[in-house]
Amino acid sequence: MYYLGVDLGGTTIKVGLVDENYHILHSISGPTGRERSAEEVLKDMAMLCLEVLKRQGITEKDIHSIGIGSPGIASPEEGVILSSSNLNFNHVDVRKEIQKYIQTDVYVENDANAAALGEVICGAAQGEDNVVVVTLGTGVGGGLVSEGKINRGSFFGAGEIGHQVIRFGDGEPCGCGRKGCFEQYASATALIRQAKAAAHLYPDSKLISLAKEGLIENINAKVVFDAAQAGDETAERVLETYFKYIACGITNIINVLEPSMIVLGGGMSAQKEYLTNPVTKYVQEEMYGGLSLKTKITAATLGNDAGIIGAAFLGTTLK
Amino acid sequence: MYYLGVDLGGTTIKVGLVDENYHILHSISGPTGRERSAEEVLKDMAMLCLEVLKRQGITEKDIHSIGIGSPGIASPEEGVILSSSNLNFNHVDVRKEIQKYIQTDVYVENDANAAALGEVICGAAQGEDNVVVVTLGTGVGGGLVSEGKINRGSFFGAGEIGHQVIRFGDGEPCGCGRKGCFEQYASATALIRQAKAAAHLYPDSKLISLAKEGLIENINAKVVFDAAQAGDETAERVLETYFKYIACGITNIINVLEPSMIVLGGGMSAQKEYLTNPVTKYVQEEMYGGLSLKTKITAATLGNDAGIIGAAFLGTTLK
Image 1 (tube, chains in turn yellow, orange):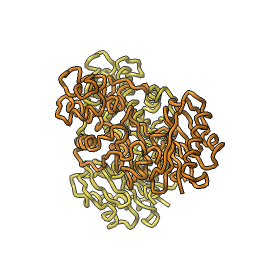
Image 2 (cartoon, one colour; image 1 turned 90 degrees about the vertical axis):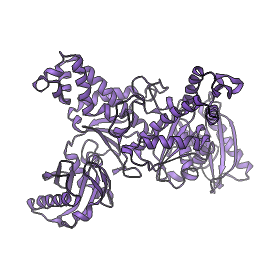
Image 3 (cartoon, each protein chain N blue to C red; image 1 turned 60 degrees about the horizontal axis):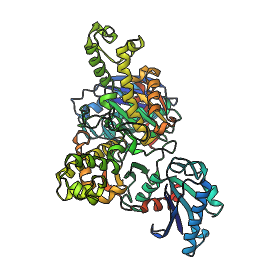
Image 4 (cartoon, helix red, strand yellow; image 1 turned 180 degrees about the vertical axis):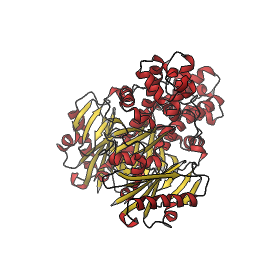
């Protein structure tokens, strides 16, 4: 049996055929063209799915289902995307549209939730029963997976880890409308902002010399880690503060939900133990009354494949 | 069938006999004497249980089980209190001790969790499937109840709503070791501290004239609400800020967990709509992208009985 997983992004539609051992056998992608109608976008998606099947020499009868991870809020069992500001999708019956072209079961899910499920099924959190995946990228997203099932909350909107305020009053304004959200301190975007501010103050820092063309505006997350690993004190201080921000939001989640594992995903997860070791240290310092930290903190292992793999197996977790 | 519920506090042990309709038929209490050994405290508890049965003319054969809500961390199915700083209980096999005197099933649970369960079974959250109870009292506690079951997290410690940091960096120090915890801004203790500070700045405020003997040190939570309702501007400003603090922590919880209902419990719940209306207004203002608030916010209705009733029915939710 095979499983089709779709990672529907604002820019690209990625489709992958996954086998029972969670391996992506073949994947292709195409432009989303998000200015178009939902019907047109979903027709392209169906064509990509059919193309993958054709290339692998199989038919719709050989697949269990199609699972789709999408930005926004989705009702997985109905196969409907309720809203998605990235795509201008509003109450779109994805299942009905896809089934115009392919006769198989179709499920949809929020993309962060799908990626979290992927990490639980066959990534960093395999075998863990109570997992929070925190995605540190352009923004900060999240997914809650408990006993193999995604916890969507009561209205399909749970897991917005990035939109907990950690700085009441005078915090950084956030796109969600609040001030002081975790996302404004713990995202890759935030790290870059913090590093650029430090580079302006310390122009001799390797933060600048390691950036492309030696320009402050070219500082990215990797430059900050590289500069710190090269012993640059400014970069070290920037990262220390950044890790403390991450630890603050992670400790909040542990105190409320106490998962068995927290997986740090998104672009930042490429730093692996350079990220998880200091974050774990600071979280331990924040534990209630100095008790020892029981929740494991680890980096995601599936990278960009998490979305496709998690989506592919949506149908098996819903039934 | 009857159910015995015990609310084990640092000062008092309260025991109630509850019927199938969730009515407390009879209750008695005795001093905890927490400086004593666990064996002695639990023997007294068993005697109180037997006394309630005797007074109601029934025996241990007429009860389903005994449920005990206790401060600290408990393993409900084993009937063991793992730790409780309030009681100096450390890995105490409560079930075994109680069964020396009464032959029935015995369950233990964290007291905030037991009270949350009570509100779900027959209080403010009856019929709701996904509930967070936030206790605003001396501290800020919490309990998560999903589909009628308490969510304890992976190590029996979930629900510490009060220990999410909402003010990173320069926040108020908290007893848990962190700085800027929600508890330090949203508890009754915090409200009183905020009101006393305001009263020092505005000595003509009704905050002082309504306090016992007209003394700042006698300002309590009720005085703040009474002064605001009497039109005192200083009290109104204090409450406005206090409600915004509460709304901050509540919105964080909604963004992460998205429960169908949040119940505000603890001593502050006596203010009912004077608490829930402004908090709901400020939470609505914090909703993601201005979307409408779907989670209901309401005041607890069982008061101090929630702990006994929730404890009494522990055995029915575990089996």
